[in-house]
Length: 405
Image (cartoon, rainbow, N blue to C red; front, side):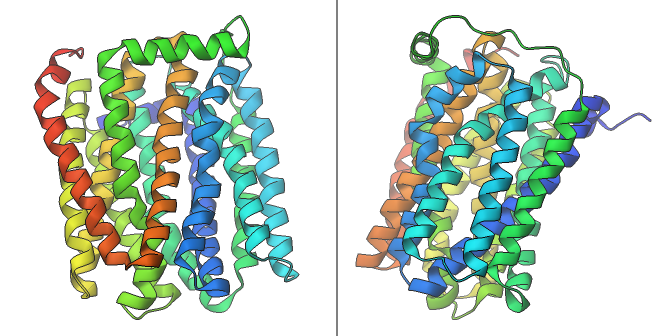
């Protein structure tokens, strides 16, 4: 059966196996993320602890992630990904058990979030770096990356409302256990596919890491996009940490309100990946990424100004569209122009900055919101992001000229 151009990567059997396993795994992860945020706020009522928990889950990506990329390029990526899925299953099961037996508390939550972050520092670049061999090279790579991001954002759209409903009549422990079993779906998909062994980089981890850093710093488009990526996620992505505060204190709701807020942002993010899937050139992806940075800045300014849920939900949808479109567009450009032998390291730099600066920004946003208010915090973040838009637009022409057609 001939597939539409927007789904052409699914014509490759390994990618199909990955795609459906990834869909189940991502859905479970989003359900757990919402349940954990609600658990933290239910137990403590602390915006600062929300930021700290998010920081613990994402900070290892910033610290461990770049070195993980060097480790990945020196090993069999497929086998390493399977091993990580087993460890993620164990981690989520332990979190479910601690919650079920009422052994969970702030310290245990931070430690469990930290362990999840360390595992994700390997898991995220592993999943991304295995996509090119799944689709046989570069021709279908942009479409495969867009479809992969579409799954992430579809899970973000569907998962939070499901989590909100589950939390209405079940415990957080049930959400964590569901996530544990979702990892087995991706494990099965990766085990069932047949891929050629990847070329392994020689030398020590330190040598391989330094080679990747030199490439990123010496390649102007990569360096510029990493700066945009860092500031975008340091500012715009901080909204997610404060959503429980907005749900209860600004919109006077409960877990279902939180699910709606998260779902609105996920809806916009999902729409962005659908648009990206139709892009056939790397320049088209770059143009959309630039537009999305500007959109994210404007939406981040509008959202904290309203107490009307009917206005807030479209603003969050626009914010989700902007953040997702910019992140996926930047990832597509970087993976398209990066040499195959450096792919694990380039992906790890993207992942560590994408999620690491998200963690730092979330920690700062939670701390500032505890001293001021959540709306005031996001207004300050929007000012920084608007300044980034001006800086980026002044360099857009050179960026386009430096990329292949």
